[in-house]
Length: 598
Image (cartoon, rainbow, N blue to C red):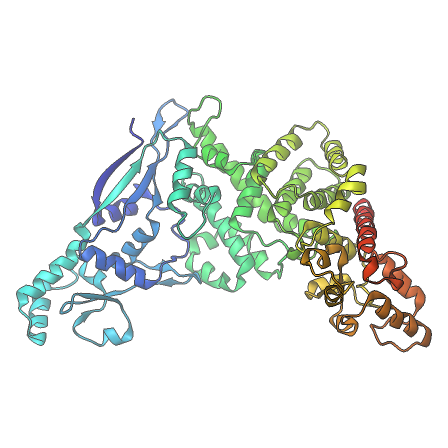
C-alpha cells in the first residue's frame, strides 16, 4: 500500500471538508499567528493562480471496535492549518482568535480597477472603488451582481464586461485547486511524527509534544479538545492572567465546564518558579499515568496501538484518553501544584534561575504525584522529593537524553516493590562518598557561573539561611531574589594586574560569592589581605568602612558560612591557587551538609 497519495482539491471542497469534520484541524481554537498581510498575500496568490503549497493530511489508523468491526480514522491536518484558517477567515468571514484570545474578523479588500488586495482599514472603507470585504462576494445571493456591476462601471467609467470578468475571477478563487498529500493510514506513528516535525520545523522548532497536542485536540469522542484546552489555558493563565476574561467570554462552552473552574486558580498566583509550558504538562501527565517517558509512545497509545500485536484497538484509545485526562487533572490540581512548589521553595529553590533544566522540576513533580498515589506519608514525600531534585540538579541527570532517562526512571520506580527503599538506594548510589569527597570537588574546578554546582551551592546557602559575604544582615536569599552581585573574592582586576589574565582562572566559581553592591564597590580591586585588614580594623574601632560588620565573632562566622578558608585575611595573589583548592572542598562539604539536612 502506498505511503502517500497526491491529488488536487478545490478551495471550496477543502473548506467543506473542514466544516463537516472530514478533515480535523488540530488546535483550531488556538490563536491565529499569521498577520493580516500574509492572509492578503495568500488571497492574491490564489487570484493570480500562483501555487500556494500543498496541504498534508494523515488518515489515523483504523481501530478495532469491541464487536470486531473497524472504525475509520479521521483525516488529521499535518501541514496547512494557518492557510486553511486564513481562507476560512477571508472567504467565509469567520472570526479568528488573536494573540490576546480576542475574536476578530479579518477583512480582505479588493480594488476592481487595479486588481489589488489589501487588508481593509477605515481609509479603504471610504473609497468606493474598493470592495471592503471580499467574503460578501463569496456568499451566494448576498449581492445583486448585475446591479453592482453596472453601478460600478458607470461610476468609474469602466467597461462593465471588465468589471464582470474581475468579479468572476475573484469569486472563482473558491474553485482554485490546491494540492493535497494524503499520508496513508498504514504509516506507523513514529514515521508520521517525524514527517510532522520536519514539515513544521521551518522557523519554529516543533516536537513530539506538538504532534501529541494536535492528535489530542481533534478527538471529540473522548474529550480530546477539552484535554487540550485544559493544558493550553492553564499554561496561558499562569503566564498571562490578564487574558482570563477574553478566554472565558470567547469560549463559553468550555468556560461553563467544571474543569475550567479547576484551573482558574492559577491566574491569581504570582508564581515564576515553576511556570509550565504545554510540553511540561504533557510530559508530567503522560510519564506519571502511563509509566513511560517517551512522548512518541503517547501518540501511539492515543491512536490505539497495541505494542505487542502492533494492531490498533478502540479500547486502548479510550483508556489512553481517560488516563491522560486524569494525569492532566492531577497536574493542574491546586492542592498538588501548590504543595509541590512549596516543597521546592522549602529546599531553597526559590527562583527558576537556580535550575538550568526544567526537566528536573518536571520529574520532581512526577515523583511527587507517584508518591502521593502510593499513599506515602507527607513528611517522607517531602524529604524524598527534595533530595531527588537536588540529586538531579547536581548530577545533571536530565540534561542529555532526558526522555530516555525519564523512561528508565519511571519504569524502575514503578517496578520497585518498596518504592521508598528504592529511592533511598538510588540516591545513595548516585551521591555516595566518592561523589562528595572527589567528584563534586573536582566539578567545582570550572569557570562556568551557570554550572549546576554553583547553583546548588546557592540553593544550600538559601536553605541554610546564610548571610551574604561580609554582610551583617543581608541574606543570600534576598540577593538571589533581587539578582544581586556575584563578587570575585579575589577581585578580577587585582588578579589581572598580577598575572592571572586568563578568564578561566579568575572566573573560577570557587572565587565567587554573592555580595551587596555597595560592599562590592567598597572593596574595588583590593587584595584580600588589604580589604580584610580594613574589616579587622573596623571590628576593633567600631567604625565600618566596608560593609557593616564590626564584631570579630560575627566576621568569623560570616567567613565560615561563606566557605572562606582559614588564613584568608593574609592572602595575596600568591595564595590564589591554594585558596581555590581549599574553598572547593569547603563548598562541596556545605552542599553535603545541606543535602543531608533535607
